Image (cartoon, rainbow, N blue to C red; front, side, top):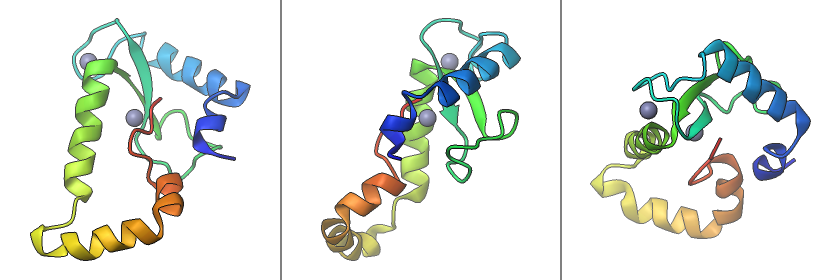
Length: 105
Ligand SMILES: [Zn+2]
Ligand SMILES: [Zn+2]
């Protein structure tokens, strides 16, 4: 199942709600209770996430920051860009599934 499709399922909705409850409906970075989203700390267990270990509640702002940070951490060093770009061209679709640009909730 595609990640985007998965986000529409009841399974995910239940997990999302469970995590919000655990975190007391507060962003775990700044404490805000507005625009909350549930972030995947890891996608390893996608579809059968451990609510305690794999998810965390973040507000939209912090969520975006976390993803920007993740992108930077996984970004190749300067000398690796060319190879990465051609690789991305070849396997764009495959890569998008495994590593969504904005994984969302
Ligand atoms: Zn996220
Ligand atoms: Zn926040």
